[in-house]
Length: 475
Image (tube, rainbow, N blue to C red; front, side, top):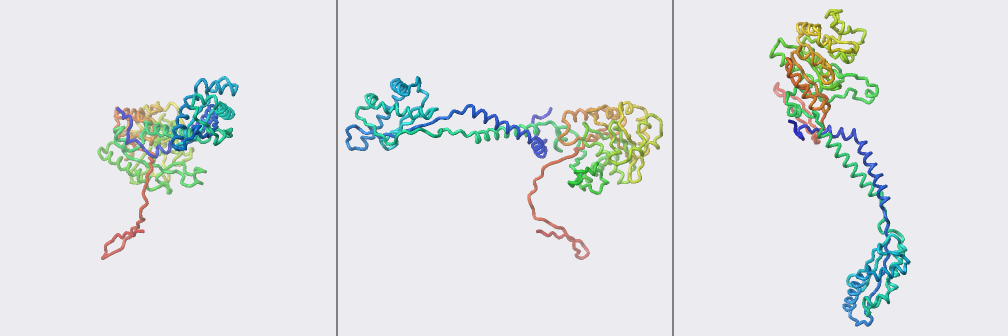
């Protein structure tokens, strides 16, 4: 039963790669958010204009007491507000403005704190209406004074003016950018979640925990072409441990796998046939098979490599062997030539290879044939190790046909490539066969490592009394 979220399978590099590869989607969603929000805001935007005037409220017969004036002003403002939306006031304003309805205007009277000054504001969609509403209301002073306070007198401190600019300024740029940013952020979050929840093998722990199988080795990512010029002309077509530009880390990864393969053979010296396959194409199985064979040969072992991927032969391409120098494997399986004629022995190549120089169809018949079985049995007697490179298991049944004819099977899975369910299905097929499943190789492994800056150290050896002493120089 799979976990909904396997924390051990979260790989920061995979997340960053997915984000960078799909950053164009984030940008498009953000731009769409900006455009749609701009159109919507522009369509829904209704400007409002506010006009205001300030009046001083005094009793008609002033007592000279400031507090008394404030009390009168407060009562007048309270009564004035209650009257603003009354039918009497609205009818008066509609009559003066020659309108049928002025109730959509927002009218408010407020008393300025600690004073007897009243601020009267009117807000509407039309600056003229706002201005005229104030004038209409205040021009009715004598008629309204009976409803307010007969002893109150209004004196103008500041006349109302026509608003030149809306008080709710249209700022689509800022709001649209905010909406676009939110849309882009949501899309970014979706991409990250898809990357996290994608059911592929992303880490070493996932091989052990999600697949529950032995991790035979990890091959870290190696750049084929390490310079800009090399990348342009694609000068390096394959990764081989015999190449002078290959990194020591890559060689060490291959050697670690080779050591485990040697250990498997030591348990039973009569079994020396290793099939290397994968779930899908482009997972690096042919590169792994070739390098494991070369690594074994460097240790002085007699190695025969059988390129059984007759649909897409790759061995001659990796070793840059001209097609004309290769005797096609199909002739051997059809009984037209003998094993010695089919086996390629290059001058500077430390392994013997049986391969095809062209693509074949209906290769499953070749894999099931008695000639293939006879070929494997003969190679087992001629070599210390027989490495067989097969087609991907999820695409064709060629590898499945060979499972009962080999001693060991190794599955190469590229990081974050094949789905976990597909990998497990291939593992089940191997475990149900007569071949022993040696384990998985996690290929093309990449991870982000944040290393803090440290003082550089240098190691030096000096001789004291005939013994070497290590001295550490810290910068």
